[in-house]
Image (cartoon, rainbow, N blue to C red):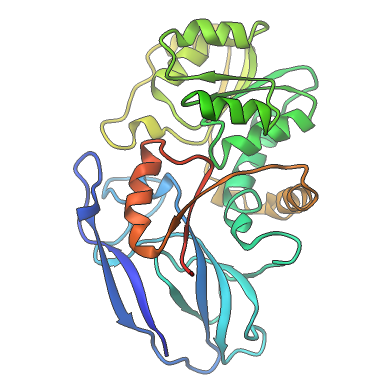
Length: 332
């Protein structure tokens, strides 16, 4: 059996996490029992929610245990099997975490079609981020033709899908992203109608220019000063899908600076966790898969090479250094 490298969480961060919070180790891969299979993970997904699970406090999910493999989704290939339903060579989506190999009895695994869609895309636009975008847009924002839909972190794994789906629904899509390169990509490649650089010295003025008719739906991934700038631009009875608050993940939570706008504009603000809405996954994945396979849905990936670079890539993602979906390639 091959030896397995894995990354463990060994201490909880105080504020910003560092590479010292993690440890890379090599362990023996256990021999398979009857009914088990061995997966060689090719891709590891890095996602902002992992930062919250590093803490010990109350949250919507159980904290990541210390001295255990960091949790996360993976896409890989079955390389050994003693399970008749999972033959060698089967591409699978699993939750093996930050490690190169995973042993399973098949529970929680999903077989993938790696011919029509690249394996890595099942961790992005045809995976949890894509379904998150689909749900927040279609079930909370519910865009109507001609409305304006804005999304923060628009060049990220979730945001890039939100805007494209909004356009397909007939809405005007406005992104908020960090830096001119990301904004150009959002408009030129993803075909949003406009994109605002949140690093601008006058964010409020740029939002007014980009959204002259106001904003009817807002998909929030960031929070902080971005949310404070967005709320006054919301039209009456606007809808906000609250997916993430990454601006406050590395420190104390950032309060909403002007909550009175929620009442003034009679806004609907709804937070959601996509794992609580498994009923919509088949429909969402079917639509997203068809869009990616045909090229109608575009996406971008930031790829770190090798498991040893996963902590550094994760920390960079929390600082906005990634451009698109952040992945780790676990094979040469």
